[in-house]
Image (cartoon, rainbow, N blue to C red; front, side, top):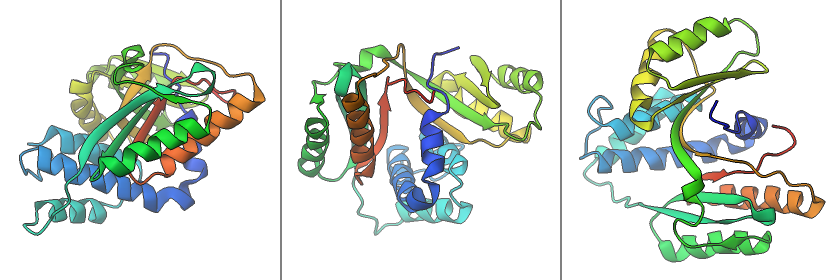
Length: 247
């Protein structure tokens, strides 16, 4: 399979779901606003592929349809003055872990120092653009949780591949489907039409290889770095190639 870190990011999110749900919805709403603006002002996902991608992510995160519609309406409103810029930061965490930070900000002068502080505080180093992204591949990743065992693995695999997916993997009742980013929306739509629901569905930066940390200090700092970055209102996604012991 792709070598993706599978379920660990989602497990972490699920564990803190109640505490972080509001913050997660706020970040997704920001992505929706940017998608509408960058999609030529279209609030129709059928005519705005970026918006369709964000809506898939929102639905997988259980964001209510009313919230999604309200945010699209806000983005389309004449009085909307939100002006976010996409910024990507790259660097190394403790033990040489490669880290990519994707942010949406209305003030670079606020965001950059926040991100740099997190790296410095956790024994990492913020690097130049492109210093680690070469070792990641951009892929659509769809995760189906089959904890109840109701789905047949072979049937899901065939449905996924027939829908245009590149790969399928199943481990401990967690089914992961990977796609080309350009095919992601079509695969999501096809699987939704077949009645599947997703634990996660988004375009991710998937590492080509992984690093294991064994020193207690590195483990503590890596967890702290991820938490500090994710707690930032400006940070949308944190991608890394740390293979922790729970993977």
